[in-house]
Image (tube, rainbow over all chains, first blue to last red; front, side, top):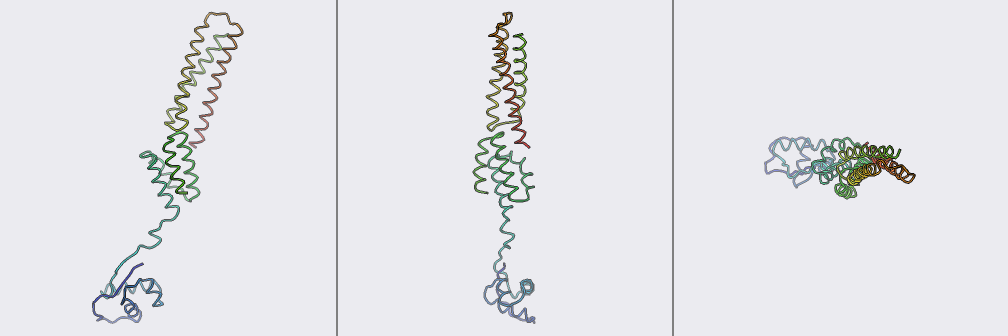
Length: 142
Length: 96
């Protein structure tokens, strides 16, 4: 989402009907999504018009939010990131050997099963302390 | 006969010690790693005990009591071997 507003530049060029509509709606700070709703135009078209108006210096970009899809990772990706950090906290440099396998997991259930198996392996054969740290983190993640 | 049984027990305990230390090198810590350290110490101690028993009974007539003791020692070595096999199987399952 991007927020635009008119600049002080006088309107000295000919604008199409849609461009004029969008330009006039930008008298106050307004987002591209709201502009699309108010003008009844498609969001893509509004964004294209805003781009043109910006290029002409008639409106300016005030603020910009990253797209929701970019800023919020999927649950699998979020769990993967948390698990990666948990492994590094529990095992330190030794965590590197488990990271490639972690990246191959395609679903949350698969990731959880793998993490639980790793926990048993740590508890039995590697380090009980590391297993306790990882177990506490797994309770938070899954 | 008694010396033969004691020698078999001693040989099996030496083999157990080899298996135990080899397994310990694969398992740095955790429950199994810690227990293997203790288990290996006892295996070495018992192996020396078998050797001592063999030396102390050397040349003595094998009465039934000594034969029973020898058999118990041999079966003890078999028991340790089975425990090590079990631990090895658990490790293989965990690492799979």
